[in-house]
Image 1 (cartoon, rainbow, N blue to C red):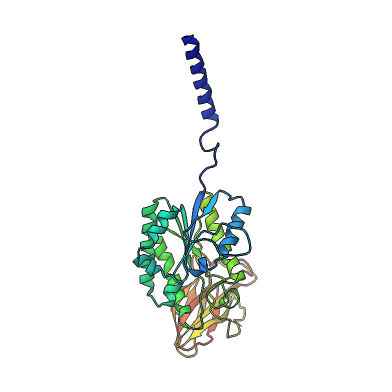
Image 2 (cartoon, rainbow, N blue to C red; image 1 turned 135 degrees about the horizontal axis):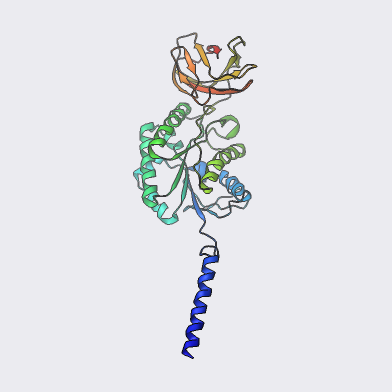
Length: 351
């Protein structure tokens, strides 16, 4: 009898081993969901309905094994979604870092991924860019101390043009221009939330997104977050246009096409005492081009102080390595901050 029992036990063990081989652990019960923390201020949490749009797009695209996490619950956005978040209205990144608030939030929620849009209130409070980035570094270090494998996506913030802070537009540009180099030093992914965002049409108050703005924010988060969920490395796309702070106050001016093969058109994006923000669109002619330059001449001694989407030259601007090749009729845009009174520059494009 003991022999039969031993034989039965051996057979049972073999069956269990076979089941284990063809039905590995984790299939019987679904794998743990990827925990995603939306981290920010009122743009993220009050109510931050871009999170509802993003959640539902992820679900509809097959990313169903996810969990938005945070110590704050959802606010009404009119659709079902996972509304947990860490969007604290009125909070500054510098205060979150100085008061050591993030470690507690991380311990309570254990995120695998953080998508962070912070800095708007710091800009509003006139915190120096270097101080904001030092706070970002503290927060990233705390994230990695909580989970060394954490994937971190940091936004270049949406533009801002509150009536009570005419200087905020330029400060936001300065912060956004500094984020890519900082991010490279911390090995985090930059998500460009400012290109194509217009405070006149995408916010209700110059700061907080309306429905159109929420859609744009969701659309910007989706590709890099989907890449993380797919196990890949999200792309970092350099910004091609600055945040739009006010509707254009100057009609576009275009240089006549010539043998050089390109034209350049200018519009003023915003202005404040002693400075202004401009945007130049370079368009190829009837044939493709591989590089371009734009000569810029101002009528009153104005000077370019900062530039993005192009390289500053002694005569004006030249293409970056990533936007010199334009198909016939194709275009690219660069922006700049100018000193002095706002003025329309003369433009000559050559290719």
